[in-house]
Image (cartoon, rainbow, N blue to C red; front, top):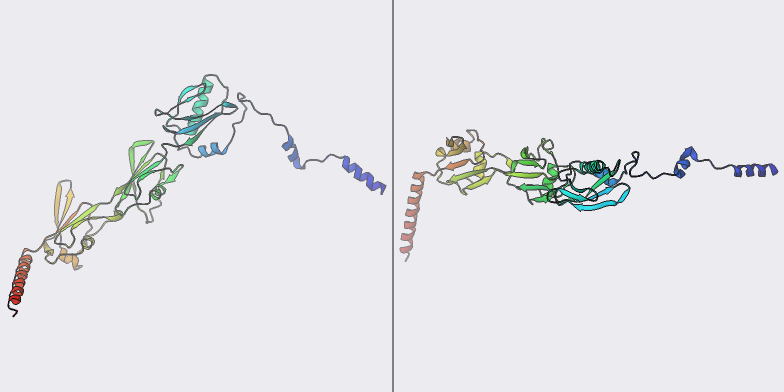
Length: 326
């Protein structure tokens, strides 16, 4: 019994060792680095990581940004970017940050502080608190044209979906103008629902402008039941027979052998004869129409005159029959 008590007392006097040195690291005193120390580590935060992952976000006029200097609480300030892209900061005065990313603005302010010998190795954080010019403009043949705040890297179909999708009169392409290069718009095919649609789903950035083109229109005039212009929905080509179907069919006095297709060319309008009777009988190919084509189906003068004479004779006969009723 005495030996057991002595062994327990000996164990109680031995200090508890930390497992694998974890406890030593936990209780080790830390020394706060000074703001002017070259070895001072830059603080890492979720805000900094979020901004660094989206370098395409550019500071624009009207944006509200927060500028802070690590280790100097009095330097932290919220400032709105002026119309010329400039902000006013303590100890620095006016700094132009318009058109820069948050990382580029941070480095510029750090350089200005070092240039004026205010700090040896400053660490500046710039955070966008309110975006005023970072929306994507979606215009043209969409359900709800407007400016949509799609921050970060997005795709073309994301912006079109945010605007409610395209209208039935949408064309076969969109014009994409990047904010960084407004003088060179890019023409992107609009091929939704096809195997190539994902290839054309290009990346768009805040500040870009998307204009969905309008579909071409073909015109059907002459002796058809409903003459008019018909949109080539979703940029799809239509044929002569499809155009006639949109016009609700041929009229009763149509001269099928004298139908014409009027097409715009560089040398002016050009008339192309159409064997419409053979096309309707599936004895000739059904040609495709292009935007602004005019399909003209004339009426037969002989048929019209015969019909008018028949109608006049029929009306006269009906009148005589009515007067002879006792």
